[in-house]
Image 1: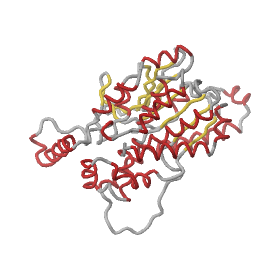
Image 2: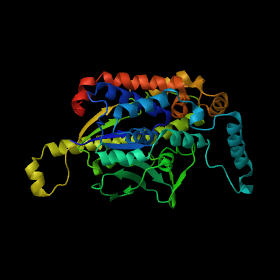
Image 3: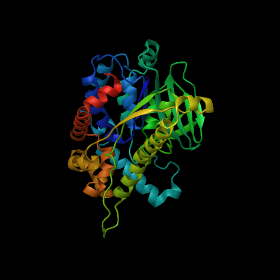
Length: 374
């Protein structure tokens, strides 16, 4: 059975996925074999998926390189975190609020992610994707981004010639040669990082308007799908009386969580309902009736702890200029932890998430091993 891996968005939360990948490499009897011939990534998950795809003919090495990058991550590797960079960004936004009608070039985002382009260019050999496909180590890599002009969710995929493009309501699958711009577009968190132009349109974070996050893997031929989430299963807080108005950070964190997390949860529930319905219909009856659906075996790995709480514990690791910026937004306290968790690209946090992802996966080692035929 052809297995698809879906790596979701979530900014710095994507470090959890690396822990999962390390556990899979540990459990595998053949460290070179890629257990995921179909890789689908969105936002920061797109970067991790591409990191595996570039070295899909040596899975263990690909995971080791990815882990090395995340374990030594600094915020300055992703966005300008120095006093000058933060100061320029803050000054531009203040000028826009005060004199917006006079400015011809308003700021494009809160943070400048130019360092991320350098990091990706330095660590990823994009030519390795086609080599892996030619060797049979990889069937397809899909990277999702959201078009600001069209409002469509586009899945750019590089795949075996047998893979076909697709078109559904507000979502398209387009064959492309994956490069740095696709990753920058897919990981361009709205308002925080600038949009990236690909051909004739500007694109932002792939989690936006992503109505069916699981669908690219199915369109590319996955018969079973493993999904690595970025939040604790059924994550919610009990309602209680609150006297203070939510801070900007709390509102922003709530908005980002709805973008990154809600679409996947709904799509998983939809897939499970379809599987239940199909299981009640004998295969021969589905064939006779011309029903083009097939059951998809799924496994979901998600954090056993709340990542926003872990972020709140490590928020002081951020560079001082970033802390000052986030303090002004109310993100440096418990209620603002959600926003912080998306921007906390610092070793104490990313290492904690890698260790959590590894532990959560190893706790289900037998289940994961059976699912992937390791």
